Image (cartoon, rainbow, N blue to C red; front, side, top):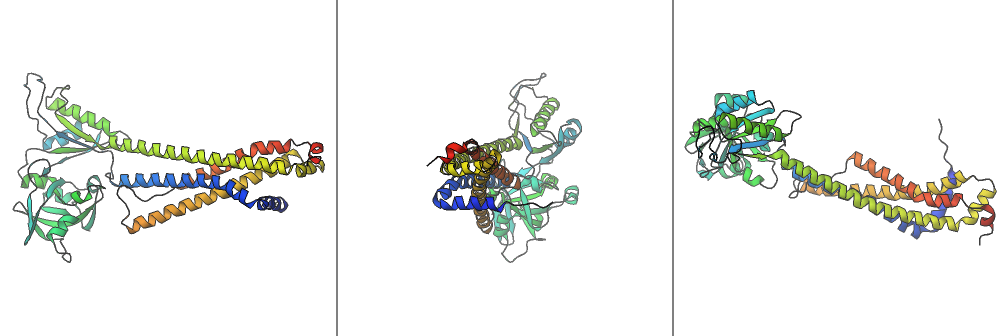
Length: 423
């Protein structure tokens, strides 16, 4: 099938637009600016979203749960003021008896919740760094990336190996810049651990503090630092398809039952639900996107109204020409098509230029951020996805069509006899 292009009609459109270059340019600028603003606002919103999400663990539906106080309500004959302890066997019990839990691990630490960070030495260098227990496969949960060596694996967990992964800040303080820390032994509170990896924190805002940590297998920590009989906190992830809030409530309910804590005693078990915070952030981003579309579409429609007004003037100026066309046999549909085509051409070209320049601006900002490390505070790389660009093009065509409706109707209704008498 061969598509035939009506070159004569396009020549007429370009001639008409060329006769009033300034008017055409100013009219098109309104549409250009609307699409440009839409692209930049949505791209900036996505950049903010990327920057904040980079600070979240790669698994955002996490719950941390711990004991935050003694019982405040007497229950089942037991007095208030009891100290509740989380134990290693509670991990297995929760896995077996709480169906909403898909993943749970115990976590201990030294110097984070109480006391001072332990004293750590390597040869003649030293420092005080927090020590955190970890398990194999928890890099994403901790928001860290191994940059040298390896992370903790299942064998380290199972054999309670005295191995450690250290943050880049720890590496810089304990080792020379040209020294390879992998395989070296550091001493934490008099206990020797072999360095197997160096990590960089991916958490935005507090990455420096996180990189001053040392991670060792959690069971190793418990046995090395006299924490054998208890667990400091639980890390809980729900089963796929469930909100973390469900697993959080179920675990608290189960612990209340087995630890004989009153259901009305809300001060015993503390928790932090990251998915709740993640949902709030997603809601904020949705609001930013909606606001961006509202502002931009309002600007685009204002530009489309400007195009419509100009097209009305064009119809007025070409009344005699339109009347002559109709007198020579031109149909109302051909007259309407001419006006619609000219309006859509103006809005599409102007809008496409706005889209292209907006994307180029975002790409330039993205390259500057890449050169600066990929992020500026909470602002990450701005971007506009294909679906957004396609939606913007749809808005362009629709706005051009709407702008042409009234002028086209006015042109189609021109009376040839009256038009030919027009001065």
